Image (cartoon, rainbow, N blue to C red; front, side, top):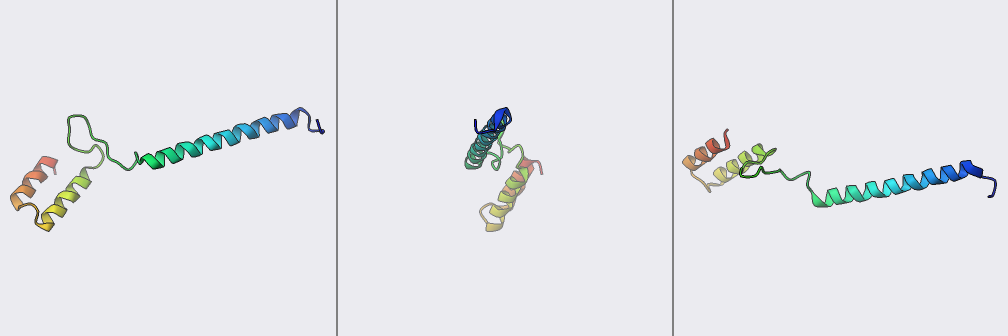
Amino acid sequence: MMGFGIGGMVFGLLMMIGILLLILLGIWALVTWLSGTRSQPRVSPGDHKPVGGGSRAREILEERYTRGEISTEEYLDKLHTLGQ
């Protein structure tokens, strides 16, 4: 077989496995990136607080208060509800 022998067959098999793994890794990375699951905060069942994004809720509350959408009483009440 053109002088490569068994070593060439083993090298070829390892190269094919490596290429297949790279393709699968690329597909996984693309699906993860398109789904955007890493950037969205998770919400516990029955709870309205994000598991990892409590500071974002406070930012939104501060923005609404700054724009005048909610009163000072509403702001303080909601801030207390957030546990801040």
